[in-house]
Image (cartoon, rainbow, N blue to C red):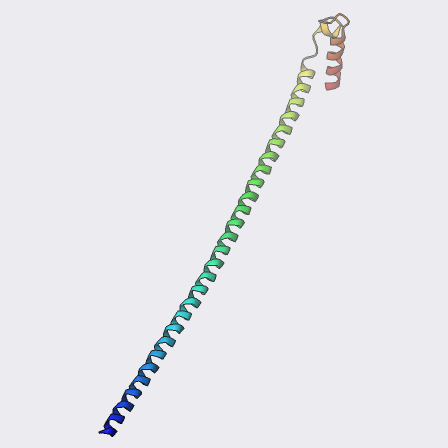
Length: 133
């Protein structure tokens, strides 16, 4: 009987040891799984940070392109406006010169008469007509 009791006690001890090993293995597996989850979360965070940085860079590039495009448009419009202004000024000078050639000052102004008593307006008109011609 004593041998049976000892055998039963040994079997219980063996079962307890096996159960403790199984429990220790479960704990180790759970710790490994938790570590893997932490590592996966860190990788996901790093990837998200990289995607966010790439998105910020892309947005900055788009803004820079938009500013460059806007600046180019403004400069182009200013160049067109300046050229148009120069063309209008040149056309006005040509028109004034053509009018001066075709229509000489009225005889009263050319002779020194006219609105000013000393004839200064007539001299200015005559000088302007001569300068335009």
